[in-house]
Image (tube, rainbow, N blue to C red; front, top):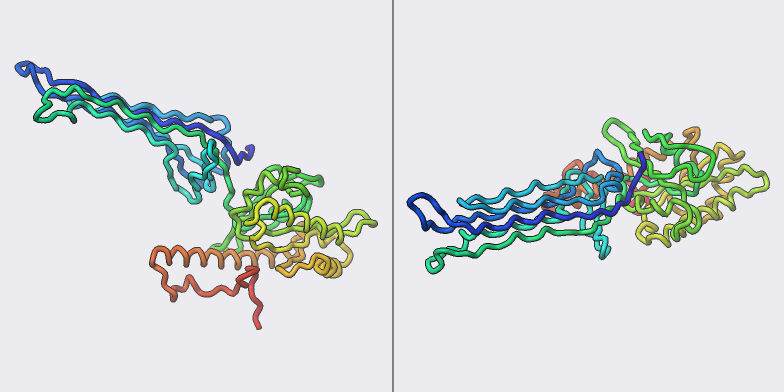
Length: 376
């Protein structure tokens, strides 16, 4: 199925029914009082986040959603029926913007979260509401109100703990297929990945995290070059970015280290130009395809010296799996630490935080790099 992460729709809520202008007329009661009922409420349009949906493709074909009107009020104090509401199911991680102003309206970040996209119009009042001691035969009634109408832009940002970053053919798809249940297309040409892939990495029966692979970036991506810029938004919700760098070389005359350093710097610059927040996310360096070089340790040492990198670094072969096990264990520890911080923040906000709670034992993870601390 084609991955769609953006759609524009129009939502039109139903109009409320009119109130009734009626008087009671029965045998032997020729001049009964007012008995006009109220109109029914028009249909409202809701959006609800559903974790079983992973694309906005349905909204590429169903762009207009119109709610039914409420029924008009009737005599004999009969109120009009309210129209049935419409519920649009969207993927978890969908952000809803006003298409006219660009204002962010809703961020559906968890399952079953529900919001009102367009409220239905209130029903009008029947003349029964206007009777009084001085107005015993009121002829007043009110029409139903119009429902809200909006043009909305839906934007999906996938929810993942770890995001893979790198040039085309850096080995991102191979890595995600090696460590997770994802099975992306893998081939020896650029831009094999055309849409984001998600994979669940399970380190034990009770511990796991989600990895997102997006199309490779190239220089100028922040200005629209290549495909990766279309999906950079999906990295904004991740906790950690894994920056994969291909340090192998097919050409004997090519200095693989110099080329890899240049590519790594270009990717980081594209991040900075695209979004400062994304640029400042914790970033781990992963040197890939070391199975294709004669002296992996020498290549690693030369790269780190030229790149002047002081953060976490891993040397792996995504193809053979060498070095990937330690990488996923360290990622799991770091993600668990983030989740504990979130639990503490939520409990403090709710006033239920208990420092002695065993869930909040201090995890041995460096606060800046999110890598496990070594024992002294």
